[in-house]
Image 1 (cartoon, rainbow, N blue to C red):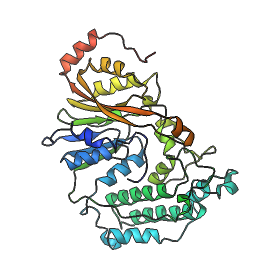
Image 2: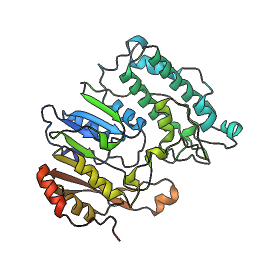
Image 3: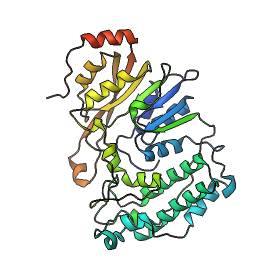
Image 4: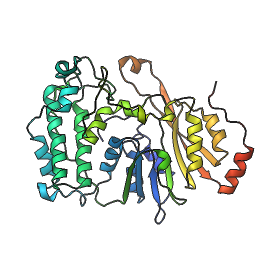
Length: 360
């Protein structure tokens, strides 16, 4: 994946894999907040079956694209993977939704000049996404091949987007890379196929069994992913929503996460871990997060045993130069939770002290 993603574990994944253990027969690695799928991919490399989930279609597509093998992406009706990419790169530009809403052409249609993409690149994005949709409807590509091409489109879009790192808003001045001509690239596909199950929806609804290993990487702060990656979500769905404001956000509040609210985060985490069937849970979190680590430790002790493993300091998300100069590093942790038997959990819950939601 070629774009920065808030909370990405790309720099920490090697440390996280040391706590996964060997895959068990029939068990799944359940990445319940899959993001771009860095950790799910590492689990697949270890031999795990993988179940990915996210509230965003774009995240599940990005994560799923990482897990596709050569065998699954033959593109027999389009002359192979490289042939499909070449056809997309040479598709005639189309003045469609992205051109109308997210390039300077938007000034004519809504009175706001949005500079996410140049007009030329925006028209090419429209053409590429429309062609992928046409191939799918005509049966020239299957669902897996469509997922791969949309995932490749995400990477191409990010390389020419006039943004600071997310799609929360555009920059007022054009960056040099935003002037480049957009082009999709073939990625390295997996040599062997992975058993993958994918769902888009509420994390509380993700299937998991006692023998599964569940990995939780919830949002840490107030930043809502649905608004920060709204353009990718539109490309994932291939729709034309009514967008609003200077940034041209698609409706996103129905996807707002309780983990992004300080008053709800700890209670929601507790309820989620309590609801799981898996005996072992891995939880990523950060010192920047809404939940104080001491409060988290106290709450998780009601569910089973937990051990916090520091993963080191990484750079804080920096949306602009001012933030970059002022921001310090944040400390990342991996919490390994070994859940007790249901009867023990119920007894512990009955005698547990009152939950303190936020640190002073």
